[in-house]
Image 1: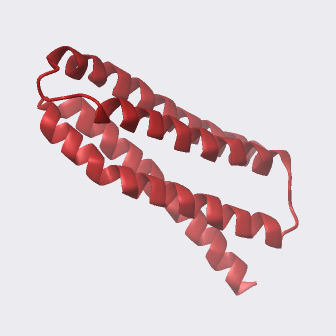
Image 2 (image 1 turned 135 degrees about the vertical axis):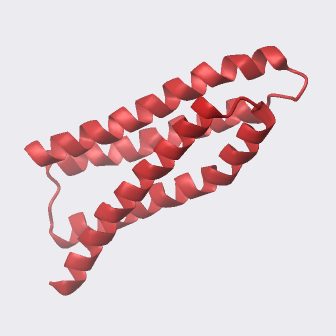
Length: 134
């Protein structure tokens, strides 16, 4: 059972790290007023975001498969991970097309990114709460 204990611990700590990446991103959006520096920072953290999400999905799949457990919580976590993946890709695509001369688009990106990161954090916390209830 040591192997499964390690997989569960890895899964939980990766979720904490995933939340930390989201919190860093929303902090960056709220504090960084220069769009170019913000875009560079978010381009750096985007692969980290997707890597941690992939590790969460992978370790969750290992634990659920080993336990032969496909309960409603696990069924909720699968679309949640996909949703977080898709919403971050949409945020990145919107940021990627903004040019340095498009000041209006740059200003519109800030509330959009805050909304995206708030949704991501709330979804992750909600799934955590639901997993503790069930």
